[in-house]
Image (cartoon, rainbow over all chains, first blue to last red; front, top):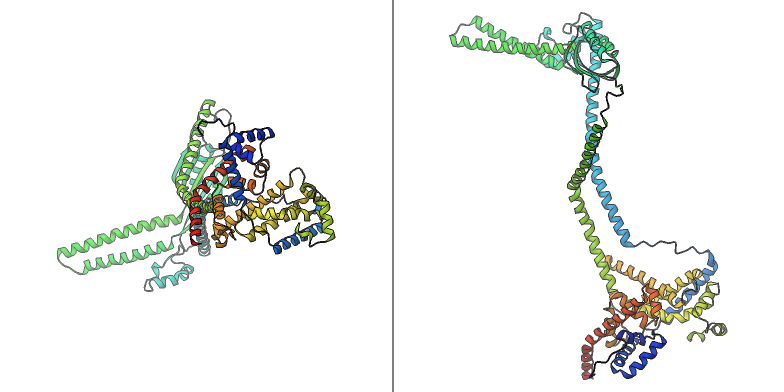
Length: 424
Length: 206
């Protein structure tokens, strides 16, 4: 090739020409061009040569045996189709074929979803367990309290049988407690025998009153009538809300039922609960300690009377007496407090006023409400964002780890799959 | 036709009536319930179809099985056959579908169970080195390019038919076919010196 020949057709056209896919006019033109242009003729020759080379890829003829079996099977199918009837066959187009990768990724997604749900579920279950444990604990405490109350009623019955019995000298109580006493110390004189069960009673009252102004004087009158007193009282009258009273009252046990009846009449009882704390053991222990302490004091005094020693010895004994005396007094005070708790029931009262909507006074101006709404909205939005952020911090890493655990093998499998496909 | 000898009157009569009918005409008759016409279609297509699968799957048994499956599929789909498309395109479309399903299954099996040895070996019965080199070169072409080339060279399908089968624009078929042929030419040229050397050593041995 000495001069650059202008080829009207490129190599691709030559190929199309060889394949016989050019239009009649183009075929004519190319044929004419090839006759003149050796380069294009060579191109055409190469394409034809390649086709000839490829044509050498002969395929073994289908074996007679297989051919027959295929034919037979085909005939069999034809016969079967004929029997079944051509029209009655179910449509095969309706059968759906699922892409295994879609199925795979869908199940992976489902697994992750399950996992996340599982994590939060276990969290909730743990919470619920806590709550139920607490509930059980409370229930147990309540039943104990109930038992205490039954003891108290038993006590009351005993008292009614023997009105003069202030515990210690009561025969019934004596026999009731003889077993305990003998176990504690059989040598103890009967005078310091333990008492019948001592119950410190606590009543919780929540009352919704119609008129708060009348409630306060009514409460005071109940107190004076039943010789009770208020250990603590809190009266609240906020500007916009309803006024309320929180009080801890002490009422003599004997007057308690009547006082409670009167209290109930203050308004609607929203809730009421009673519990009793058995302080018998505490009382007994105190009694024992007191007896021992008094004995010790007695002995100290005897020593002081009978023996005369030097001044330091006397001083030491005096010191001992003073110490024991102090102990005795503190124990006596404790005993008195305990007795007081038994004699006076504790009534925790909470009185609130019934809600009554009143027009005009309560609702704030529109601007304030708008402002509040905006502030609330902002707070909610930030709360949501913070919540999402916290969730990501709390579970994000775990989710990522699980994603990696699930995704890595999947990706590896997919790669292997594509490699295998390419090889086939 | 080789099977005219095994069947006597019936077959020759059928051949006389069917031999000049088009594929579409035969298939249409079969779809309307004439079972005899299918014999002619089977005779016409068993070799090309077997060849189609032989050049695309690893072993002969699979090729035979796929050929059989294709015919079964054609029979099953007969009631829905509409003569709008050429029967040749139609049957190759079914064959391609089955081939893809087969490849997918094989790849899936290979992914999870590992490659079976016999599946890796191509059909080499009596093939010359030169032919093996050519097959290796074809194997190394891009998937779609290879398919277009094979459909053109061995199934003798026109550009339009290939475009229909593979759902590609006509121009894409043309340009990809050109690309495939150029790549194949290069691959064969690269292999040629080795082949020549092999031939020389063979001559020397003789």
